[in-house]
Image (cartoon, rainbow, N blue to C red; front, side, top):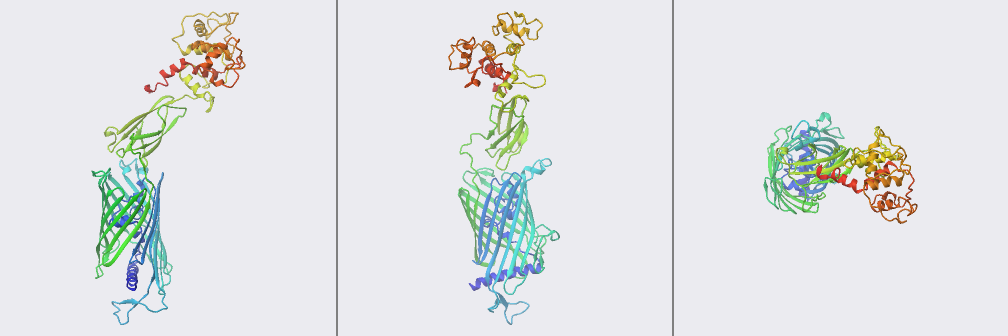
Length: 635
């Protein structure tokens, strides 16, 4: 135990001496990721597809489909403890992440220079003086991350901006060294990282990360309570990741197998004689629940002569997946140290489930096909269900796909018939035929300012007016509660079907002159038996039509059969009333449903809205609608 503590102290002392001599601080984020990365030789700059991206390349979080949390722990000689927590969450404005990582050691015995040893090459031994307190050290970092897809900003300037992601880290450090009469050993500081990922191909990615790029003049440093200042050496990482084998987005399709290969090159350009380091990693998933990993992790080490060289370390690991949980274990060698180093991490992210059998390559959730609306715009929402679709257009307008391949866009509508053409394309866009094509048909109804939303006959008024059976007034209003005259009703019915009107008919009513605006309509209606005059041979064209009179005219026009009347229809209409057979037949035909549970009030003036409602329920109007506005094949 003493030997292990002594070795740990010597390592700690060597690191601190290096930091003091070079005035370089140690960044603990290099050992705060997860055991998956440690098992792959720490080659992760271009992969960057889980919480470890916070520590390797924050740009990787921009394309993550859902949130994730990870905890990690590890040990050096069972005494040097590593600990990390990290997580991220995608939003509509980019992905945000947080991370905490660091290491600590406690209970280390202080050391002293052995008596008689050469001062030029001192020998350190455990200080047995009971008055010297034990040593401890901690070094922590708290990281805030933001990442986004660059087409958010560059889509106008770069045609491939949708394949570029970027991210930044703000790192806050706290460290402390105590014991052995050390004073003012606490320090705090801050630094920044920046990274970019280019998805060159579905199976090939490149990554670049600049770590600790904030200059000391702008705050990129570690400051001790004593006033001593250290800086974090800038570190440049270049990475490439290739998806060699997989079910999709791989160089070679092989169902049930998945192989990922990654290579990183790392260099600290501001550290004199610091070697270039290589990291190589491979991950093989022979089954969806198991991952086997191996790698080569190079670190900078003293060769014994004061020169730093690249020391290679083998790494191995395994991962287990189950319902969104991932357990990772890694074994990591360290050159020159005859010790075992193990790391453990546990991650969770929600499982994104697609239907076991995808019926449609693109699912449109809203609007439904054959929709009817008064809105000037419609919201189009849906989901792309297959990976080969890379872009989508609605009526030739490009629509952005989210990280989870959903879409949400607005489309304008014209009054009348509308067709939304939804076209989906692969990597080559319109150069090739659409991967999927579908149409959504929408009827936008005409709106009148005096027929408000929620008005009981609003849709009927709009449809009848769009068929030009009943029109509005020159000022754009409809006046649904206004009365309708007998002349207007005759004109309404005859104008609605010109094929029935008999041109050349002459009026037989004494109060309808030949030059009256509705004379022809009244004459046609009388010829067809739609209207009847009064016993005095007048028509009274300016008189407001009653409910009974208006219903009778519409029923005759639509050829609704008359039936025997009973009081089950309306208690205020007797069976002897002149219009009772017409009321009975119309009620059975569904033309009077708007009056159910109410009195008929036959002598009450009929409103324009009531006339529209009754006419709308006739078979005549239904046939007109089926031939035109409701003929969805004509859209």
